[in-house]
Image (cartoon, rainbow, N blue to C red; front, side, top):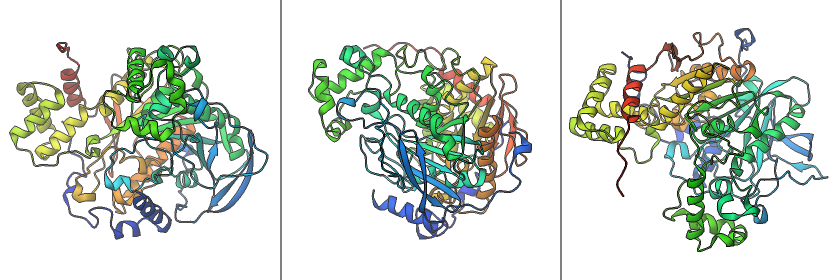
Amino acid sequence: MVAESKNTESRQQNTEQSSVDRRSFLGMGALAAAGALAAGCSQSEQAAAPAAAPAKAGPAPYVEGETVETTFGKIKGSRRGDIHAFRGVPYGAPTGGNNRFLPASAPAPWTDVKTCAEIGPRAPQTQARIIHEWGVLYRLEAASEECLVLNVWSKGLADNAKRPVMVWLHGGGFAGGSSGGLPYDGTNLANVHDVVFVGVNHRLNVFGFLYLPEVGGEKYSQASNVGMLDVVLALQWVKDNIEKFGGDPDNVTILGQSGGGSKVSTLLGMPAAKGLFHRAIAQSGSQVRSLTPDQGTATARAVLKAVNLKPNQIDQLQQMPYYVLRDALTDAEGVGQFAPVMDSRTIPAHNFDPVATPISEDVPLMIGSTDTEITWNTFQNYDKLDEASLRHYVRGALRSDDATADRLIALYRASYPSASNLDLFLKLGTDASNFRRGTGLQAERKAALGKAPVFKYHFGFYSPVRDGELRSMHCMDIPFALHNTQIAGPVLGTAPELQGLEEKMSTAWAMFARTGNPNHPGIPEWKPFTLEARDTMVFNIDTKAVPDYKGEELRAVNAVLDQPRPARRG
């Protein structure tokens, strides 16, 4: 029987902050508060663990920084305390016009010193609905097709320190988001754990994932997965340049959350990315299967139909102003999804189906999810559930009958005897979601290869914000892993115990990047995940290592969802 999360009761208390109020910002530090307000207004081995973490560098202002020579020209950055920052660094050429939908090329070299002191443009996108507490942590910087930029934070420059490099891939699925969000700032991680932190922007949605080889002819034969190839280009930039920023090109970890975790999972199966990274962390994101060419082609045809063009008029699609194309597709029906396509060239097979890809078989993987991922949903129903409504929602999550729903409800009630009906559904609904199923399946199939360790985690902290409604939502683990809980006050609150969990998690993430092993003296022994023991690190104020965590419930849910279903009649 699995014990209820230790924080479940605390979320029911009415604490100091219920949403984004003045006191929340006062608890974040001057610089973080100003940034969040601006965003809201604009719409290892244990022996290697640091003995003591230095103070966070977050509240210090940025000042004029140093100049570094990259393979394309000199760039001038900024500095915050002891940390050098280079933001908005071009790693690829502009992607508009004749370059749209095609693999990116390197940027044209420059002779003057390029100032890289501000976050660069994000990719064109339609802003998704985001819960308010997380939305205020976005900058919502201007969009542009000159979006192939990255940000670098490091404690040293060209000092041969061989720091581990952590390359962050932002969330937002394959359609939205950017690396410019305040929780993705690399200052604290670089300062506290002496890593080089890199955030990457790349093409998204129709601009990054329109699959054209089947409808566009020879000219567009390479128009496939270009958003992922952008990330590969960024990783090549890291390999060629990161030593100048104090990093080790032979010790690169790719990591990301949600859509970023899906991108990490996709890179594991891309031949072009092999050798450009050495460890991988996927938080609440997976990519067990990619789209098929038929699915990608169907989306391409729907895009052309939405803008009244024929397949022989794709050149006009290239020349259309990006905002016209973006806006035309925002409300278009039947366009389908934009995601990586298994094209047999850039992605030769489904990455984790029926087995884990052998392309990255020697790459250690850390993977996990949060306790109630689905409380991120802006449409989440927080009504008190009676027995009939609980059965209704569980039946929908499982796509099952009443008897099956009742059986699973009884199982979850036995495991969580103090949970309300609403909490039972939120736990079960999350276990039935791809956030849990996808990450779990990838852990199993990666472990089955037996070539590199898999470290599985479960994030169980419940936020007290908004009277506890957010619980342990999707994205809640990011500020802890990236050492940015102070910045994330609007979604986490400001309780002192946050810092202890932040130290446990960020140190584990940094140690994994440094050595391929997340263990450090601040947590229990974290054993690699195996199909037999299924060890999982459960991160919470009271962090525990638990064999086969939630095993009975997960197996029961998966058994229902994995059973064959009759084909739909058209």
